[in-house]
Amino acid sequence: MATSSILALIAGLALGLLGLALVRRSWIRRQGSHLYLMIAGWVLMLASVWPFVLALGPDLGVTAAFIAPMLGAMGVMIRGMTRPVAAPALRTALVSTEASRPRWLASLRTLSVAALAGPVSLGVTLIASIALFRLTQSLSWDMADSLFTALVVAPLAWAGLAVVCALEAPLRWRTAALIGLSLVFALIALALPPSVS
Image (cartoon, rainbow, N blue to C red; front, side, top):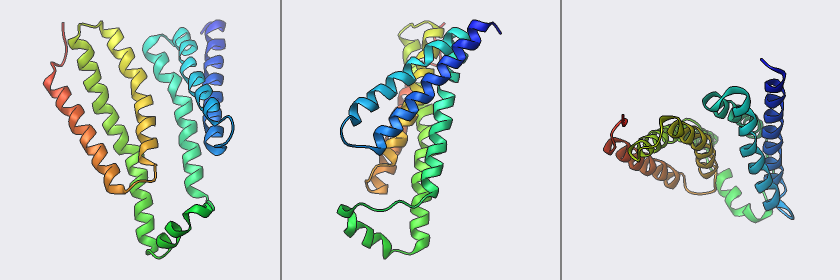
């Protein structure tokens, strides 16, 4: 591999991890420059795609660009799930209600949320990517452009769905939302032709 490609990979990796760090910092510190940190983090993660594309080509480059931030985000999530966190004072009533529940029920709820944010959201994202790919093909896009669009949208959509699944909302609502999205995207994918020659 050429030296320029190695430097591009290092630059892309640094941009992606720095963007992830800024997004995490914006979530931890919700006052002041929270919004600016969040925007800067996402801009850096999106900008990290181009050095990877220059080094590895469009298909492999886009995929590799999101691997490092995704692995880092999974590490942060696993670390956060294994550490107890003090509850805010405003949620005292909710905490007391949850404390009265059996421990196994609380554990089951935690596993359900993890399943929704992980494999279930990934499945919905894959169905959405197939629907998007078929939609762009039906619009007579070039195959490379369709693949590039699907590869860019897939990790962003998975990240967005994972965040939505972790929000404070009834579990049945989150489950129903994912089922509804998967059905809509599946119907779109089935209604469109697999490919256009």
